Length: 177
Image (cartoon, rainbow, N blue to C red; front, top):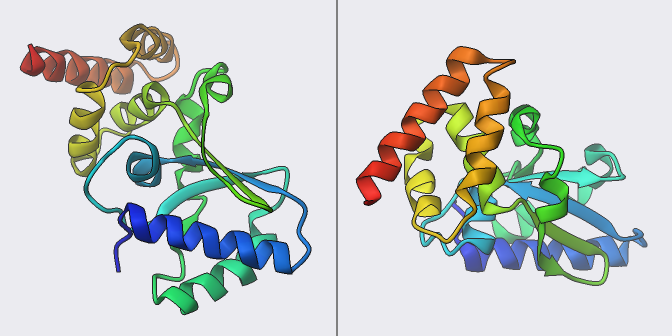
């Protein structure tokens, strides 16, 4: 079952309660991808999962609680997972300073990456499945200079990939004019 905003929030609230009941100290999750799109950026679609990396705790320490939420709500066992960490290598050092608190409970805080940082990751990933998210982000008021500057920096490390991302960005921005 895919997660829309309401179901994603229900799952996070359930996780918060389970963490509190288990005596966990506050757990902070850094969320990107489709989860951030539905939680923070008004994307009206759904996502198969919430891409989240815990800050200061090991992901495995949350596994039992995540499994309980999945069973309770009849959602996929990997409804919350750290898979997007593969793409965090593209983020600028300033990304954490732009994170937005999307949910704050007793034992769980969810912070989403800023729209600019999600856009960088999605452009660099270059996946066709991200085009809806990319187009949605480009319609928002974002600081496109953050994206341009980071993609220029990334040309030093991954020239072909970053050039492709910049070309895609230019093409999509021209569509919006």
